[in-house]
Amino acid sequence: MTPVTGAPGDTRRPSAVVVAAERGATRIADRVVAKTAAEAAREVLGPLPPDAAPPHATVLVRHDTARVHVHLELAYPTDIGARCKAVRCHVVERVSALTGMEVPEVTVQVERLHLVPVPGVAQGRTQ
Image (cartoon, rainbow, N blue to C red; front, top):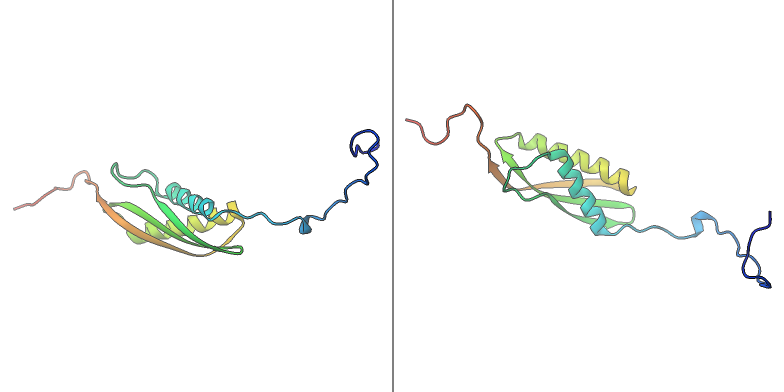
């Protein structure tokens, strides 16, 4: 089987095959990494209180390393430390898996706590 190189009568030499390592690099935009991190935070948090804003993230990408800062709102009462740890771990895992970048640092900033009534617990003041 003869490879097709161009139009009939074309006397140009076929193009040389370029080794994959010499073709260039794929660059993932910072905003794509930020959206990936925010979505990972959403995945681990589950349903949010009705008036809570969805998580958002900012990133600093240098070479193949992404430092992530996640801003979120949580329902209260909750174990804030455990929720933040779960967000950090999941963001590292998902951003690394989806972008191929190393994620050495994820900071989580809780912007707001939303009081959610707990069934069976008295609300308000008691005398």
